[in-house]
Image 1 (cartoon, rainbow, N blue to C red):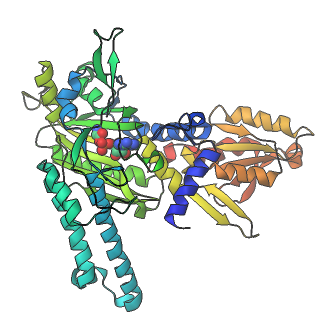
Image 2 (cartoon, rainbow, N blue to C red):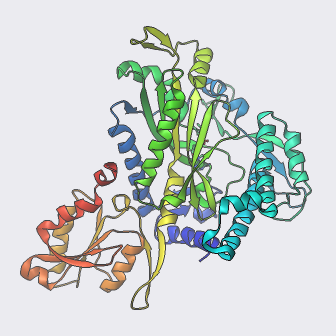
Image 3 (cartoon, rainbow, N blue to C red):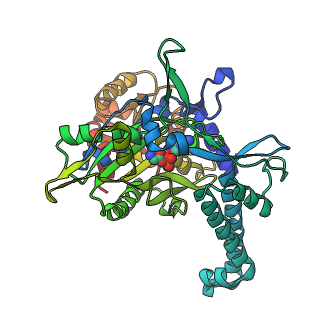
Length: 511
Ligand code: GAP
């Protein structure tokens, strides 16, 4: 199955099994807005919980916060979002389609890199074991040309955007012969900046109302509460504040399912450090966050770092953890060294001091900040798409299985009476009420047992517990493992401890 097919299947599976629905679907949906169904909401909650536990519960010096979505409008002047939270847009005059100019150039560079990779792959097959891919990439004129061209385009894009030279971005698109993906035309408009914040009004009368923005990131809620938390929590530098919550962006290139949404959820942590120590902490959090991803057991080849050439207006270093989504490697999480930009700006705009008195140094300063910021919906997509498998079984039949990390699965176990009579449903419901104190479990008696197994494989349920006639005789049940499909007979009273070995989040947190 190629990646396009995989992506289509992932989207339809997400809908068919109650994970993700288009928003207001009965009215034909709302572009780039999605709803999470009965299984999606559980998976999303589990990802959020795992993030929260590993960031807040597992760190003595990180605490949580839940700031409001609406913030004083001056917040966004201070943060630079009113003036600088823009995307460079370009329209194609023939197709009338609007694109992000930077995405057009980045996609062009990625295509060149893919071409180079294909050439290298072909050569590797031709030359066999002695093949040195690095040397080949440096010396084969065609491959070198592809890679140089990709690098040069991305570098020039970064330079032009940093210098706010939008004419040069357009010139770059024209020089490289980049065409509209829809029409194939090169008939482009000028490049313009477009602010991504949604606005609304607070107040009952049009005259008295003030313009508010829906927050485009959760981070600012943390900055404006920095002193509240530091003082009331008696926090000492270095310390962190973590928050999860909705953010809103009027994305122009809203595509790729829940990868780029207009309403989405972020999980962010701001780590406040001594000035001059930020790059040390930046490296620390890069490694720490990658380790968090790896603890989930997805193959390591799915992740890579991408250090930024073009830095956001607030950062002195930034890197993305990219994930190999069905449409290629894309940003999953950002780790940013944000300097003292935000706290300093809020000091200036509010007239309130936002400083920390460091007892060890005997002086006050505005802390520097290292931020980790991950999109919950993107993390959902990363897990969902990399867990989706179509397997041919030994007897030739097929199954679709979601091999989600077990502690994050929406339903942890299904309790299945072999038949709907002879007391088996009653025993099953007893087991259900025992287990539901700890886990989200389901009772399922409809259809043949094989069909029920498939239904639970498809939503990633790690265990199926079958209650049969032997259960009545000796108090044992069968426990079927989603991944191995092996079944073992165990005593009813051992169920909880056996499940705990696989399902508890502490298994992941220990890694
Ligand atoms: N506070 C820093 C910040 O917001 P960002 O790189 O703009 O940085 C952080 O966003 C993360 O939020 C991204 O890595 C991504 O996972 C997620 N994200 C950003 N825009 C998104 C969108 N339109 N839809 C879904 N997730 C998004």
